[in-house]
Amino acid sequence: MSSDISLAFDSLQARARAEAGAEPRDRISLRDHVVEVEIGAFQQERGIAQRVRFDVVVEVAPPRAPLHDDVDRILSYDSIADAIAAALAAERPNLLETLAERVAAGILQQPRAERVYVRIQKLDRGPGALGVEIVRSVPRPELAPPPAAAQPPRPLLLFLSNPAIASERLPGWLDQLQERAQPAILMVGPGDLPRPRSRSRAAQRRIDLLAIEQNAWVLAGRDRRCVVVDSRTELDWGLRHGQISVWAPARLVLDARDRPAVDPAALVPWFAALIGASALVSLGIAPPPGLSIPARGLAADAPALFGR
Image (cartoon, rainbow, N blue to C red; front, side, top):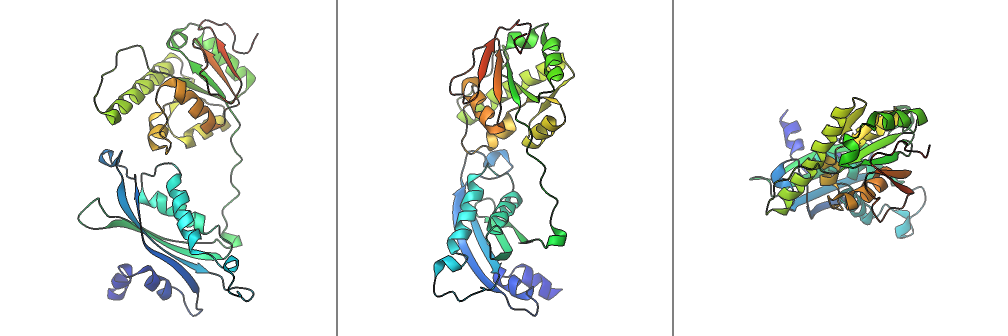
């Protein structure tokens, strides 16, 4: 037991050597790689950068031919740093575990990589270094995961103004969506009620997002076919199963690296690009500029969505 505890707090290289077995393995490593990044599930961790340290050890397959001192024949150290940078460039992670998985997955895409040890520690969160450590391997064919599910279909994005939400025609519009069997996601702006104002930009951003989400629930309360969802997983599930989803934006917007503006004029094009929308129909308000997809604006009392 004492040796297990000692190994748990030892270096990744020691871990790798202890688990190597009888067959020696080649390894490359990156140690004490410190990056400032915004990460964390707690509210006090949003909007600030904190130091995060990466230690990575990669076990690689032996070369099949002499290296001849050629950098193109090895797994470069830059590949490790690039995998870390790519993981950090994705959406804002709440968990170190999520970030570690992304780093490991990026490294294991390299042709010679066989197993990777990833240790990530927050240096500014507590009295010591708080972290996680994972070990991941290239799966053997018999253990490979099933093929990834097909990409969800490209949806129609339907933006409803407040008069459109309140319209008596709403059930008819939803009937038309279901008759076409076209996947659709509904989007709304903030309601008409005055919103609290804050001197803090971060607080005001939250308030504005909550105003949109409140209005999404108003729409859902008008017709039970409208289901409020806030995650990409739920959105994709809805597209595959014919659900009419109403997007609650706070989760995806707050985790986005590019920090989209919260007003509908900016949020609609951003979300349309994120989900790969095929077209936009805007009820009761003109389509915003900056769209790269076909868009139509209809009156808030339009009898038909599709030109009937």
